[in-house]
Length: 229
Ligand SMILES: [Zn+2]
Ligand SMILES: [Zn+2]
Image (cartoon, rainbow, N blue to C red; front, side, top):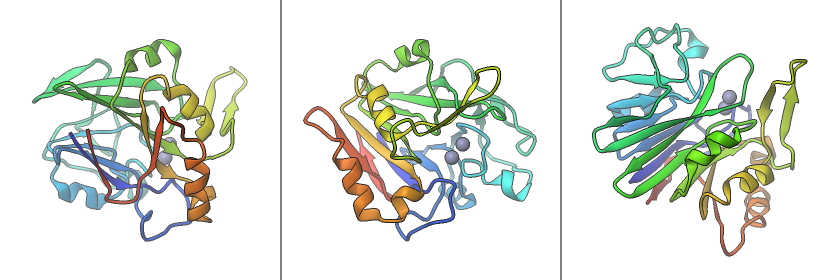
């Protein structure tokens, strides 16, 4: 599979010429996961998956435009700006791909899910923004050739909150996502780079690279970067 990272910027004001665009991942020029920018639609995807309806993952939330698409669009819930959006709760087969939604915890206001994409014997997972993934859902990840996840916060513990019903929301820290995912893969690609990274990119890269070891390769994507599995 060819995985093209279209955008690597978290929902922040800071940006850089290599980290200008919000979230979008294009798989084999066919499947688009998240539409952080309208221009991602110019790739003419044949299938769209939304991880959650936050504006940096679904640009149309910002401009309140009604989105009409020539292809199917699935997400964890329906959205009023995309009347044709469908809910994906179970795995589906589409062309040569097997797509498995993995429920995640991230926001109290919107539902969220990551996606495992399988093609032949290759498997990748995009977590999108996460405060937590329940154990029973983590099990489904099994072994993956690549995990793409968020890098909003470098500090251990990230920014996690609980409401009075003890429901969890926010963003995990990078040390926590590494700990969660390392038994499932030997390669993690970070996108959704937060202010901590964009304030000083070289130091940001080295902070992530310091967490690497011989069993785990950590990559920091730039807008437009391609990975192959
Ligand atoms: Zn979000
Ligand atoms: Zn986000």
